[in-house]
Length: 248
Ligand SMILES: [Zn+2]
Image 1 (cartoon, rainbow, N blue to C red):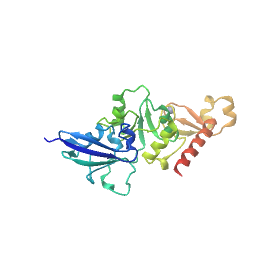
Image 2: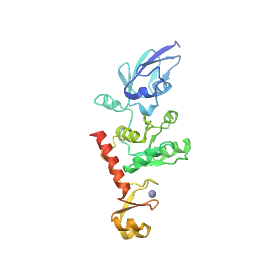
Image 3: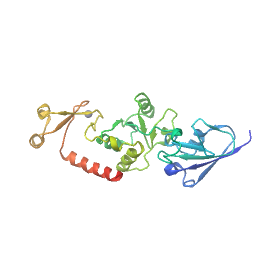
Image 4: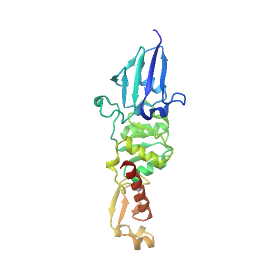
């Protein structure tokens, strides 16, 4: 088979995944055999869950599409050309269940604070992460692009920022979560949902000052942790205002 060249143009912020010399530009790949467009894209460093639309010479294709001669491939992230090619999108946008890898503990906590269901075990091996992702139908959050490229990953996201606050904004944007924010509904420790309880239900567990100053309480249905509108709550309010500011 004659060797051929595939040129790829990565749009939007997908150049985050390219080598420094390739950023902002077009990547050329010389190939000697029929190759799926998914493999060509991932050979450039871009994980498939980050790709929402592929155009080969202007025509939409899916990941299994095979390239076998000179082609121009345009690769788009979620949120690009959003009014066009609606039927040809490759990603699920609105996902509300996640699993975060061991390096994203702050992001996991922040998302739980906003009410989102985030499985997180700092000691989980990659194999366990992928297993839980699959059996519980969760989207994978990781900055490990090799892990994100694993064939079993259908939905996932690599936070660009290393800052947890910015990562939270990124995840809300990527998965269109803004309208689903439900603060104070999920346990930060174990991810189970919180239930409103009366003061009498939890009074034995409270510190003396908490008994005096607070009237509204929630209890975790998983681990039993009691939450109330103390200093924790004003911090949460501040955080919510910051997030709303980003989306207004
Ligand atoms: Zn809990």
